[in-house]
Length: 119
Image (cartoon, rainbow, N blue to C red; front, top):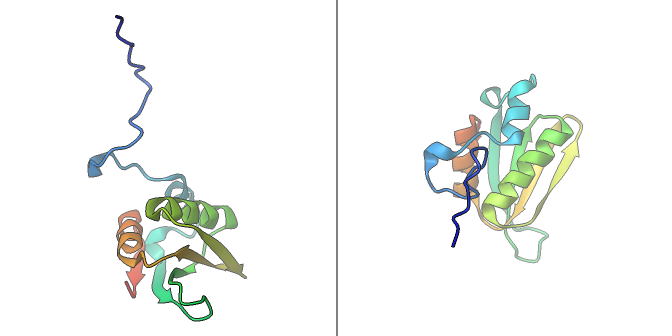
């Protein structure tokens, strides 16, 4: 029986160690733009109206280019294991994640450097 060689360029697929969390592509892209997370105040709220009683976590106040908002939404949906969408009106984007995930989303956004209100 032979042992497989470990590739020095490989990274763990999943880790619970908080020191192993690297900035995501969304965070890197937001940092490289004029709309850095540290200068943005995001508002979190829970909506159920017009959704047949289903809860949706809504993040508003994100002023970022379309790709950055899409990447951030993808990361948050993956974090929560839920679906969602991005709605853009003018320069502001609104991210909707299905379900009540306010504490989890608020913690991740604070970790990325955003200022969060309403969590």
